[in-house]
Image (spheres, rainbow, N blue to C red):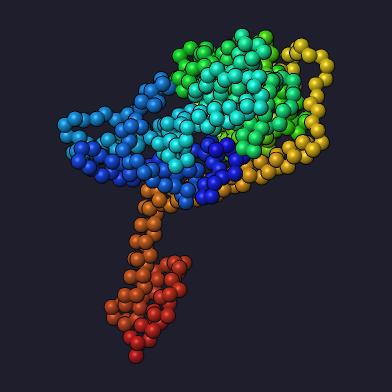
Length: 492
C-alpha cells in the first residue's frame, strides 16, 4: 500500500520511520524448542502494542541480516541441556540484547526482515511484485520504456522500489525508475532531472538518469550502487570523508538547491547523502517529490526529539548538518546533539556543525540556509552559474504546497508535544522509583510512625496524652479529634 492510498477498512496508513521496540515478556518450553512471547510497541504509546503470532525466533535470527557485515550479539545455542531453566533464562537475556541492538540500529530497524518479523500483519506483502505490477500498468499506455531488472534492496524504504529500464529509442542507455506515491513534476536547477513521470490514484512512477557512480554516500563509502543497502552502508570498510575543497563545493551547491526550494515554498525534508548525485562536479538532489507525497523523512525520529525544529526549513537545515558531518568524517553521526568532534580538515567545518548539531543549537533553533551560505566555509565558493536561479511554481500548486506544508508542520508539532509529555512522565516515574527516593520515603514513614506513637501513648502518672516534643512538628489532621477525646476520657 502506498502512503497516499486509501486504507482498507480496519487498516492504517503507517509511518515506516516510527521506531518499533520489542520486549520478551516470557518463554514457554515445547517438546523440542522454546518459544518466546514478545511484546512489540510502535512509538511511545503503550496502547499501540501487540504480540507477534509467530513466537519461534529461529527463522528470524541472523540469516536475513548477515549481509550487513555487523557482528550481532546472537546468544549461543545448546544441543544438550537446551531445556534447562538456567540456560533458557540466560538465552532470553541474550535474545533481548539482540532485539535491542537491531531495533536501535538506524538501518537495521527499518529493514524489511525486522519489520516483517515484529509486525507481520503490516509487512507481509511482496512490495517488489506490487511495484512491478504498477509499473507494467503504466507502461501499457507508454510502450516507449522497457523494464530490464528490479534493483532489489538498493534503497532503504520498504514501500519504494527501483528498476533499471531502457528506452526503446535508445537501447544502449540505462535509466533509473523509482516507484512511489503521487508526485508533481517540477524542473529545478541543482536537482536530478526527471525524464518521465506518471501518476495513478495510489502511486507514482518516475524515471531519471541512472548513475553508475551512485550517490554521494556510495562515493563516501566506496561501494557499488546496485548492491544491497545493508551491505553497503551498515559496516562500510573503506568509507572516508571528503577533502576540504569538495566539502566546500558540494555543501554550497546543496545549500543553493535548498534555498531554491524554500524561496518557492517547496518543502523537501529528505536531504541525506543517498539523495545526492554528483555529476561532473555538480551536486543534484534526488527525491524532492517525497515531501509532496507525504513520505516520512529518514531522520524523523531524530528531529522530533527537539521542539525547536518545527518547520520544514529547520528540518532541511538539521538534515544538512547530518550530511555535512558524513561528508567530513565518512560516516553519519551516532546521535545528536554532539559536543565533541574528531579532528576536521578545517575549524570552519566544525563551526558550522556546532551551529546545527550542538545542544545549544537544538534547543534554541536552527540557522537559516542563507546564514549558512554566508559562513566562512561556504561564502568564498565560486559557482559555475552566474545567472539568478528561480523556480516557477503555478499559483494553484503553490496554494496546495502551502496547505500541505502547514499540515505537515502541525502534525510534527503535535508529535513533539506528545513525546515531550511522555518524557516528563517517564522522568517522573524513574525519579519516584529510584533507590534514593525509596529511602527518603522509608525515613519519612518511620518519622511519621514515631511521631504518631509519641502523640497517642499517655505519659505515666498524669493520665493525659503527652504533647509533641517539638512545637513545630506537624500534627496530622485526622488524629487531632481522637487525641482530644482520649484526653477528656482519661481526665474524667
